[in-house]
Amino acid sequence: MAVLRSVIRGVGAHLPKRIVTNDDLAKIVDTSDAWIRERSGIVRRHISDEKELTSELGAAAAKQALIRAGIDPVDIDLIVCATSTPDRTFPATAVRIQSMLGVTKGAAFDLQAVCSGFVFALATADNFLKAGQSKRALVIGAETFSRILDWSDRSTCVLFGDGAGAVVLEAQPQRGGREDRGIISTLIRSDGRFEDLLYVDGGPGSTKTVGHLRMNGREVFRHAVQKISGVIEETLVETGYTPEEIDLFIPHQANKRILDGIAKKLGVAPEKIVMTLDKHGNTSAASIPLALNDAFEAHRVKEGSLILMEAMGGGFTWGAVLARW
Ligand code: UT7
Image 1 (cartoon, helix red, strand yellow):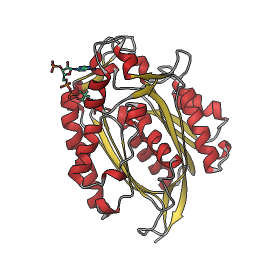
Image 2 (tube, rainbow, N blue to C red; image 1 turned 90 degrees about the vertical axis):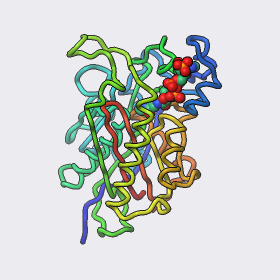
Image 3 (cartoon, protein in one colour; image 1 turned 120 degrees about the horizontal axis):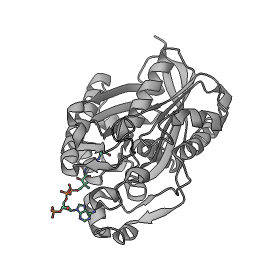
Image 4 (tube, rainbow, N blue to C red; image 1 turned 180 degrees about the vertical axis):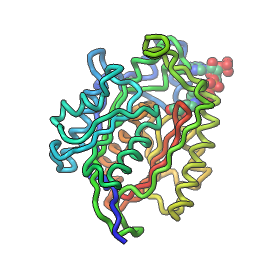
């Protein structure tokens, strides 16, 4: 039976020029390259300069994805931008990106699910496309987390970085079988009981300030392995695929030990994991499309590749997307 699927037509990314190493951070907080590498797997990260906005990073990533897709911006009729670091409280960063790209059709809006933002945005756009409400969507993950970090808190400021990634999705009729290209499954979850384990201590409606990121790292770590493994297992059961059939595992990049733990628990071979944590740090909603772009440029993504993406973040929010390239 023919079905509409959201086929990934192109991927793109953009990183700020400035690179900050672990040794650079050791000059401003009591930390060391050895501690950051051992506990997180991070070696360096990109940090935007004061004038570089989330919208600019997102628009640059989107342009590259459109060029690679061979799709004119005027043919885009949906933009979903996942971000927790918008340029302004409103309007949405997505509408700024829309205007930068010259897109005037359809709708553009932001989606806020912190580090799970890209997975939530993919699930949202996929539903618009499958329902026939949109034809071609830009799904963007863009962040300038450096703006909400407390640069005197060594337990958080060493973990994050800035950047953006984007994909172009197009609704295409497929046969409805295992060989179908496009998004096969999306599962998204939230549980607000855990909001105090990872949050920003400010906001327009409470403190009238932007605030700083606060995290109970050890607790988040414990929940991450459990919740991500759970949602991946659910995805595999629902779709009937086995871990051996996954060609590429593209996880949210938060901690190498979390990724190794999940891969081991689920039986995903280490060579299938795309790891960009060392050079990007945790870029929140941007980390999955940045990693996907990295795999694409390294020719690790081929037509027909079965790709599993997953993330977990503040809220808690978490989810997984299975797609065939
Ligand atoms: O993207 C959203 C999801 N986020 C995550 O998934 C992050 C999950 N959590 C983690 O990745 C890890 O918990 C961290 C990397 C944040 C921390 O690793 P950990 O092994 O859980 O360390 P810890 O928080 O238990 O801290 C161990 C020690 C503490 O010292 P004491 O109390 O044992 O004396 C910290 O004060 O390490 C200390 N510490 C540091 N030392 C040097 C914390 N941060 C640093 C630092 N440099 N930057």
